[in-house]
Image (cartoon, rainbow, N blue to C red; front, side):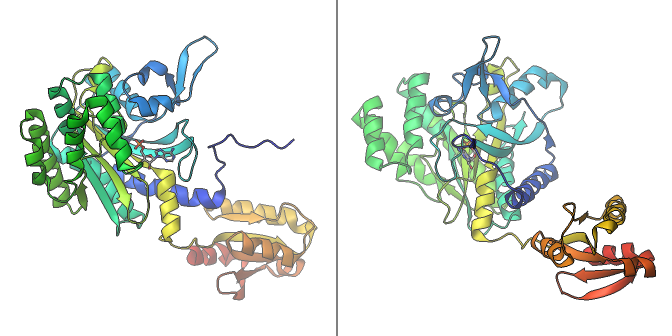
Length: 428
Ligand code: AMP
């Protein structure tokens, strides 16, 4: 009986994975150049790690179940909570700021659709113990530089906001924590559902007047944070958040990022306290990454009060964008395939292939056996090998290899002792 993968889960095949690993390695290189070091945390975490810290959206979409001992556990829906927990637990041991990055799969029980999976991959970084505007800008630059390094820099755009602006307004109105989170969830829907629907949602929660005051923020989307000032008059905390937003905005622009102020961008997660941002690329309708500042989270996990900021890139979406835009250089042929004239030479071919592998050269032979030379050559061609060596009794006797270059279709004879040098020169 055929068994399929679960809805929203995928098998990833070699051609795709090659692109995926390429993107991943670019992201890693960007993180490492900026001084971040890798950590890995468990895939399964106690549910409490996320409870009330993530906001409704993520909590609703978590894979939660009971383990055999009756504990409530969750498949990680993201990494930030785990890293904040880890830092809270052993932060005292490190020199600040701590700079960590991660690459791993995460799980969300969302409704599957294009580029929305139930298991997907994130690469991200967290910076703990720094609160300067440049620390937020650096975190944003990790997204920006990754997009640039995978060839998506041209149309890249960072949408930036500071959730302190909205949160301070809500606090001034005496709106409680849980209600705040519901308001933010509604604001987060802007751009995804009809504006009127969001208006209605906010009015229901806050009343008409306050709802439309929040909606007023939407209309100043643009390039210049100071345009927000008049809208925020009377909300002291919001004005302060705006000042910080201006500084982060300036720092990001100073290093060449294209940034757009987006006052309704609040992100779905409850733990953000200041800067929030999302990374986009022109013509691609969904965010490729996002992040922000979460100054309270480490303390919530029992650690010392620690300012922190981080980002997470959606690797699957970036890979898709890279493929869609065709920016990845064509996959190059590599290595050497040894084809044999007859099956009795297979052992000799195997020994040759292993010696090439030991010398650091990608090599293979026909392990199925019983196939004609031309069939073996066709296989080598289709599977992306650069060279085919034709191994026959005559060549063995004469101590030479007949080598065909599948890129140029040239064929020549190489003496046994010269094979390694020849392949190394060609494959470099
Ligand atoms: P978030 O912290 O939820 O904004 O996630 C960070 C990034 O992960 C997003 O910007 C997306 O690129 C990616 N992402 C989020 N949810 C999904 C999903 N269901 N499937 C694939 N990628 C996702």
